[in-house]
Image (cartoon, rainbow, N blue to C red):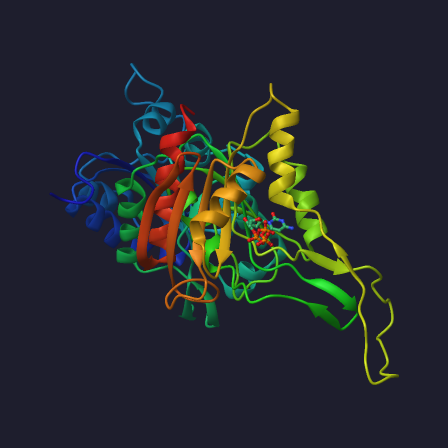
Length: 407
Ligand code: CTP
């Protein structure tokens, strides 16, 4: 079967030199079985003719919001409703700005506002435009609203510059579209909160206490939840790389900051997964000046941090009538997995505990794979054998979604 068989794709083309690549994209989508409806802005029609796109898509091309050919429907609403996916490729800085601002002043921008299907944007522009704070902010804003992006590539740009801004290759865009349309969406309509990374507890302005967490498991959980249709907020501390796109990502440093960010969202989320490695202790007194060495030994006085997972468990007990987050805790252990996991599940009032033996090869901090035993109130639910963290994340979300009840 063709990857896009039975799917309707609205392809919006905007006015940049890369508009010619929309022809190759259109023909790829058609060859993969999609019914493609092309919309072109006035600018796009200066670079490539509607006749080209009509011939490739085998459907009339929409350019003018007031050019209503079929009296039985309102075209931009009709197309928006029919779409399984809307792709904007190439997307200029202008259309990205209009989408971020909710502006509807032509056929494409109006349809984008009316569409409830997922939207995939493939930007193309000059490198300085792509890096302009306004564009950066607009892309971030759209990402946090669940708009998907196929990032531009780096290379020779039509304007003569070499840098980031070149439209992704048509095949790459078509593959992203196929991925979006293929997957199951067990978390559609859900709002989920994930914590990732290792918290940092300051000693003085240049020193801190940290841990080995890379954030990879939390990032994989955020990515998997996003692709399963959830509205994702990620609260992340120190990690090895940047967080995934298409989600709301909030950077924190200490356990106290993470605690505050998580607690302020309770009552508004359907699930919380606490993959972060949170420091149990912080400095009693953080020095605002760099500490000088003036003795053979140094004693740092530490005090207990708030236990965030415990606080969520307590919040659930204290707010019986409110939207109850399904809670998944992690337990990093070096033995006696079941005993500690079940103890944590009960003590912290969790729905599931993902326990891993961090001393086992292929599991735990910094590795690409993980080995996880999932426990619920009834005991061991499932043992997930060594798999890449993304696969572990998908399985965890499937188990959570089965237990969360209707959205
Ligand atoms: N956790 C948390 N806040 C803390 C410490 C831990 O939310 N201050 C969460 C972690 O994000 C993880 C779970 O609690 O999901 C288990 O962490 P762990 O440190 O293993 O739990 P503890 O109960 O502190 O375990 P131990 O008694 O072994 O120290």
